[in-house]
Image (cartoon, rainbow, N blue to C red; front, side, top):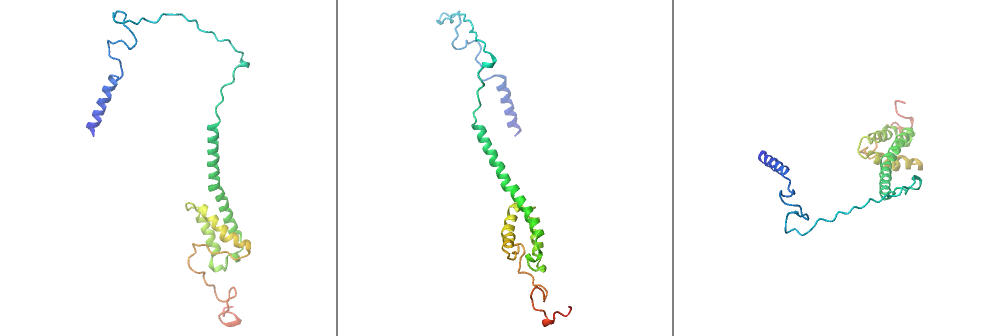
Length: 192
């Protein structure tokens, strides 16, 4: 490897010492004749003196306006910028606002809407919505789940569904709660 680097260095030094396209010494440049050469038949062009043309001065208020820049690059860049800003707003800020709205809505809802208190559905929804802030794309998925499984049923007056991360069937409550028959008949449980 060191040998290759040394050879490349030597080639670079030699190339810089003698330019490749330099005219060889002792030769006239093409198109020029040596005046002492008898074979040279071309004569130098006659020297004619041409007076420079004087441009008339134009008053500053009547000067031509500068050339305008074509609008196409600005239109394309503006369209791209509007697209990028719209995408960021649609995929970041709108779901973030809806996500915060979902947490506030679930926390302010009555406990009875989520089913019996021993099932902890409301707590599971709040925990899932809070954890969704940390999960990649969670702020996109959690508001959709809240909209379809919590907000929709609440508006229709139906009970709220359990979140998918609560595995297993609902927990059975204590006897005598929420319409279940008491264990010792109509008198109620022995501890009442």
